[in-house]
Length: 227
Length: 227
DNA sequence: GCAAAAGTGTTGTACGTACACCCATGG
DNA sequence: CCATGGGTGTACGTACAACACTTTTGC
Image 1 (cartoon, rainbow over the protein chains, first blue to last red):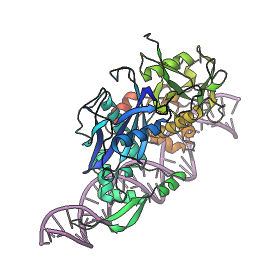
Image 2: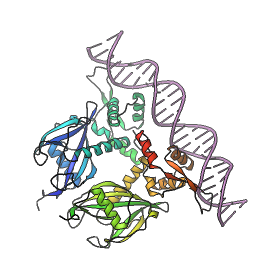
Image 3: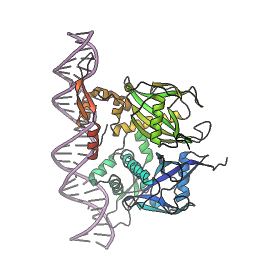
Image 4: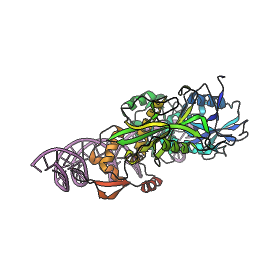
């Protein structure tokens, strides 16, 4: 059996979130061949016999978009009997968080085009992909309140207002500046950068970065991230 | 193709939690045939071509244990290359909450025996089942703090101390009686029963039941269960 | 000086925590 | 009358929400 023999009954699909222009956005690809040719859909593909599920998701993501080394986590399996038109295919959905500025999108072999869409202005998508996307949105909104995964959507360094805008978009609410700042600072998860903003038409803000090490330490001592 | 043709590359496994003797317990079956014959493992089976994933999970659970109409939810797919000895098989794990008192365990065709085990005294289990069990435990402990799913582990009617004992076991902590009562009562999710406890060697406690309708109403208005 | 965003301070309320206490019942 | 669990009350601190306010910078 070849190393790249595929399992024809199980596929991978990736829901990739990004944050641009104070908006939550989603990465879709236009399929270049196969049944879905010419339509927008989630980046996806087949699993090799020789690789685990997570490995397959990373590989497919890289092949289709050029994105690598990001936050990627399994969302679950979707297996309605008629979800795929040609035959019975079960798909394992993954959900990823990216800072779009870090990546030049490079559509791969099977993707004619790759593009970001604001989450509330998506085009029609293939198969049961809108069902998967909705599950991913819900998962993200839940998870972001209990774990500091939101930082994966931001650049390495960011201002406090950046985070606030991010959380306002994710939680779809308005937050009080003063209260938000105190809350996030009290958690002691951020480290001050040497730098401040530059080239802004107003007072330059302090830059911060998220320290994963600190977070892991806190977590071991029973710390719980909230909001 | 027969209605009951199976998909040979994808299986279902169920992690079933129950609460007995103030302890979180897990239901395992002793496999009666197949590769795992004679060993304890999660109740599991193959998916029919003609049924969805959730349907398969319900069916398999009923076939192997007699349990039906319970809280059942997908946990995720497990697909390490070598997780199953004979060939590449991906399994979709489900996670269920049961009140053990409601069910007489009825081992089915392929299960020689079905039995509850305290969560910290499990026997050795097949394949990657201990990995799946750990994921399920973690999922339960997270979820139980944000959604009132714990009630699925209790009888229809219960005392406030029953819930407290349940949460103490789930969260592995001690809770203050007075504070816990106020907190849970303030949520207005419980309705007083007509009855009180009987046959207890001390003052009889008020019985309550969880009202799912009330919960759904609250949730629509942005209510969030916490503890 | 104006606009725009950075950043600080104040105050009332609501909730969590800790702990003390009384009540009812069976043995 | 005592052990056991049921059930209530109070006092204190702290976190959160709402809102007002000052500071820095570019145009």
